[in-house]
Length: 224
Figure 1 (cartoon, helix red, strand yellow):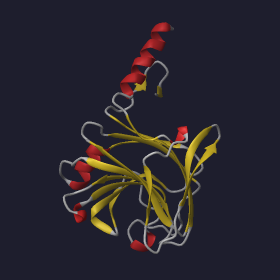
Figure 2 (cartoon, one colour):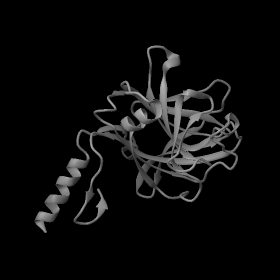
Figure 3 (tube, one colour):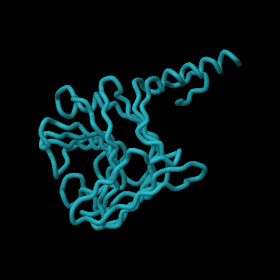
């Protein structure tokens, strides 16, 4: 038993090596997060709430659009793995990833890559898609050259459930933009429904960046 526990512990430590905390919502901590608003748009409400026994970030949008941004610099090649958990009440029935009028999502997580000039800023937008199939990617209709959207989840089948996600930001950037990424300079969250005029509610768990992918513990066959 001692050997099994030791092995599991080593796997756990290996899977979290060189981790960088992005969001510590479970500790009731919003340090470093700044609200990003848009002219003429109502603001989405973000608040720390209890969901069961843990504290999470809740976002409520009623025809609104605003986000939370954490400015932070990291090398996506050295710390490529972005991990987070999220839950949505449902998707937006009028949401459509292909048109500006449908560019609303119950939940999305951005990784931001500034360029030398503001128009060179790029972003990967990990979305809980409305129609785009899970695993597919598409340009954002408002910024087709600079923002690529990746459907990490899609549709309402997973609504009401906490889902844990893990993406290799470095590999996604190379695949989506066809070149090596610069240093990333921020992570953002947004729940919005301004274009469709609908309503959306989402919950976000802690967010971390890590050097290595989480490993599967062979002794208990579950993800640590």
